[in-house]
Structure formats: C-alpha cells, structure tokens
Image 1 (tube, helix red, strand yellow):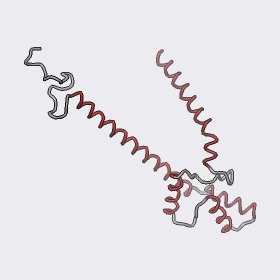
Image 2 (cartoon, rainbow, N blue to C red; image 1 turned 45 degrees about the horizontal axis):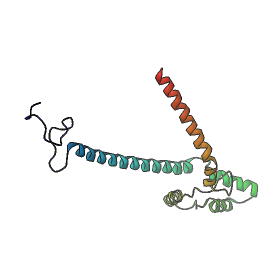
Image 3 (tube, rainbow, N blue to C red; image 1 turned 180 degrees about the vertical axis):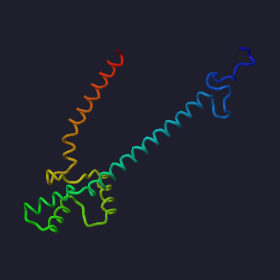
Amino acid sequence: MTDSTLPPPGVDPALSAEPIIGFGSPVQQLMLYGGRLYRNYALRAAFQAIITIWAVLTFTFVLVRLLPGSPVDVFIDRQMQTSGMSYDQALARASSIFGTDFQRPLLEQYLAYVNNILHGNMGTSITSTGTPVLDIVKAYLPWTLFSVGLGLLISFIVGLALGML
C-alpha cells in the first residue's frame, strides 16, 4: 500500500474505509451498534417471554373452563355425593376453598386469576384439599430440576460423543 491508499489514522481497514464523523473509530461504532443490537435482542426476548407466559396462562384458564367435567365440577359432584350437599352449597364451598366466585363474569375471573398468579398464589389443590399448590410445587421442584439437569447432561455427553465419530 502506498501512503495515498492508507486509511486515515484510527480506522481499521477491515471494518470500514472511512469513519463516520463524530462517532469515533469504526471499532467503537461497531461496539456501539452491537450493544444496541444486544439490548434490542434482550428486549425482544423479554417481550417474547412475557407474551408466551401470558398465552399459556390464558390457554390454561380457558381450557379449564371449557372442558366438560372441569376439576371444580368434579369437586362439586364429590361434595354433593359424599356430604349430601345441594349444588348451591357445594358451589359455595368450592368458591371458598378455591378462592374464586364462579358466578362472576368470565373476564373478572380471568383478571383475578392473573392477579393471583402474579402474586404467587396458585390456589388450593383439588386432590389434597387445603394444601396450597405452591407448597406442592416446591416439594417436587428440586427432583424435577435434578431430573431435567441429568437428562440434559446425558444428552450433551451423548451428542458430543456421537458428533466426534
């Protein structure tokens, strides 16, 4: 290269022929632009995670209410058969145990459901009456994470071994 074809001082010839005036060297510009991309990526990923969680919450709420013989209906039927309660009495008991009023409009029930989930209140177990669901999840979470981690480790090792063949 002759002196006339050399890029100006502070410019990496592999990145750019000329720097953008006022924004530092091309390397600094690239780092700045990469940081923006990373922040945008992080924001996009966080937004997608929030949308996914909302979709799963909504799907679960709708599915439980649309299925014939929902768990609450099963609980009400069991209360009517075992305790000899009327439907209204069993419904009132289910409302008090599960912390929701099934006579309210669906939108109000949904908003209460989302509010409870956001505050960590997952309700009361239907199978273990009186036991909070969060306590049951906490009891099984360590073994679940151990099983998932072990499966991931085994698949990683097997994948590496097969990939080297």
